[in-house]
Image (cartoon, rainbow, N blue to C red; front, side):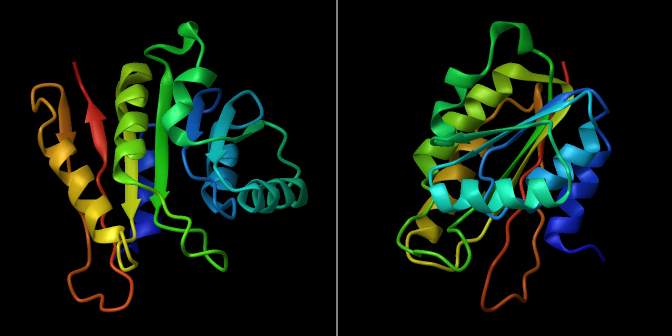
Length: 188
């Protein structure tokens, strides 16, 4: 059985192709950004967001170590993704990933919030290619995490089932850190 992160990468590998533009909405320590960079190849582009300079620096260092030059790092909230996507990308974003919660080994009071994530999801859905995917990995074992998870769940449950398939995947016996995965598939 695949771990949450391995499964999320598998779901993205199924729909993202070399040369596409993709989004890492919460680059954190850069692991998803690096994965996406390799997936889209030299002709593709990754736009990676984080609100913490430490996360941007950590990601930048990892990308340098792996000679990745196809990533734009953005020090801003994923709620502002629309400010970084040009009109010509509508219907062309291959996929996106969010790792929600807090930056490991950092200030645990700086957390993602449901409202900003929903704004980012709704923006990405406008730009997502047909059969593209948005993956949300929600770590909710911290203060504020349960509220964030419930806010996002309420929103994604309301998405039109004729346009989007929403899957929830998680291990039910995790006691310390809980995971929730919600991939979207846009199919017109």
